[in-house]
Image 1 (cartoon, rainbow, N blue to C red):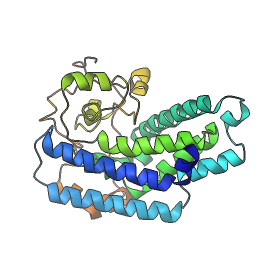
Image 2: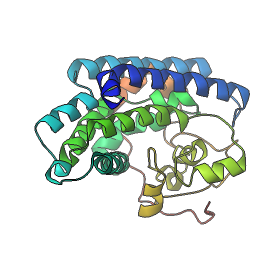
Image 3: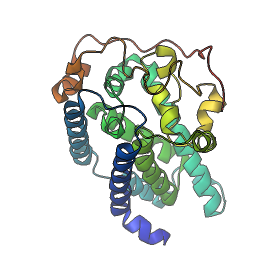
Image 4: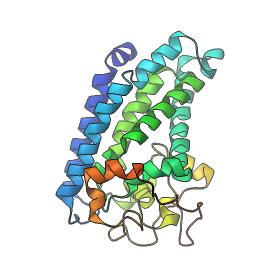
Length: 284
């Protein structure tokens, strides 16, 4: 089974990604967490257009997928896990955890380093919140994300099966955590003990600097709890909280052209201030 999945990793990733989008779009339609905004067509057009450009550009510049790169790393015995004699299942678990921790660090750097925040703020400049926000990344950020992931894979020597699991789960999680879907409170409280949920990640897209500078984790919520960047609840209700950035409120921020050009302009807002836990924060 493992060999089959690795051989068809591209198809596995695509099926997981499009199945997640379909199911979450249905969920948003049946049980929305927030009312739909006034710029739905413009938002969707810009966000989906950006995703198409990202896919085309990354495949053109980086033709080797993460799983393919992991196979090369494995063939050459590169990375820490190849220097340790351990069962494949232990190496796979350690590799997966290392990749997910790497995504936390990568996201933290996107917020803290001005040159990276310059491109990442495009992701935060949307004025509403639904699954298409998970597609809204500048191509420069996409290339940095790919390079960072390859570096973690090479450093750790993550087994290809662990890389495949991480890639598939990120494809699902990237759509899931940006969903405008409602879940019962008891489900939310239990799931987020292990996984990042939409309500947890929505706080990260709040207009408040103390909130959008928190909850960086991609799949496992433990990293935010461990490193002290976890915020359980926004200051206001999820249904009415303002989404976006305080200095980018113009609807022009939803246009594809604006998203592509803005990071290249001379002016760019600084990263948000260092994390401080909101005084109203309570834990789940």
